[in-house]
Image (cartoon, rainbow, N blue to C red; front, side):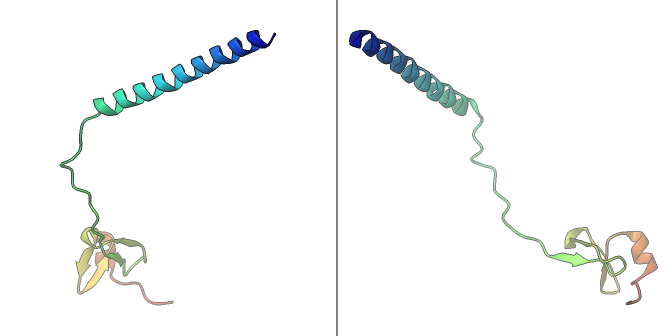
Length: 86
């Protein structure tokens, strides 16, 4: 009985080891087949956010429309001008 149990455990251990090694090999092959992205720069610069003087929504400064020193989210809000404070 002891020898049979030993061989069953040894067989299952061998199957487990084979499966783990196969997964590691497949992962390595998958990573090797991916294109290298060494030349792509990472964008780490942040951009200032501005607030629309009419509706109050925040948007990046590069997308804002500036009129008379105030920032607006759209041409329509720029033509309406700033909203009166409540």
